[in-house]
Image (cartoon, rainbow, N blue to C red):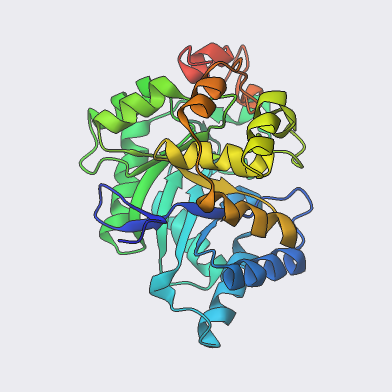
Length: 315
């Protein structure tokens, strides 16, 4: 196993730097171009989701690269995610994802949020009347069926608190291989990392730079004076410091940039070495969760009346 990969509890390996493909514009040509550039730079892990709308672009670019012999299918790792509107039928949802992508299988299929929506709620911000009661046992049985049918090589979750992760383990025949959550130097997820480690669940970090460039994101991480001073000390960039911090904690990082220089810069985080003082300085930073999930909380129909309930007080 190469040092830029991690072995998951399901037995397969996953590259620890992934290219995120969510963008508010969701321009197909831009996304495809970015994937071709990323492949040239050595990226082998590509992260998409039904709700991003980027599955066709990701599938098309990767299929083209495979057909032209630039990469083998078994050398790339593709993650997609089950949206809340498909909890009633993960098998059909993954079949549709595979059609969208023109692929026979994805490597990882994640439950995007612990939220079940009406089948028509195929948009990012649900309306009040769109929520249903979460029935994680039947959703997870559907995820396990996807695995049995060979449509994915691993299954996992995203945005699950420690409590929700442990609840899932009470009935799962196949444990989740991954929990993909927001994690960066200003939201360090120490409790969740401990819980997941005790069950051999890999923690994958989305928004490892705090999501700058996203509508809901922030530059607070890369603009933080402590992160900037660590970068200066090592002749690195703040982004490289943030990514190396995540990698050093044993996590993979899903970083979204379609800018060629930043994509190269992000890959350079492998070469950075942080020292004990750097880790201590980062541990002293005030914590602040950026993606709070308010859009999944309401007083009437959501199973979560407050964001504290959504995250089980891990916020």
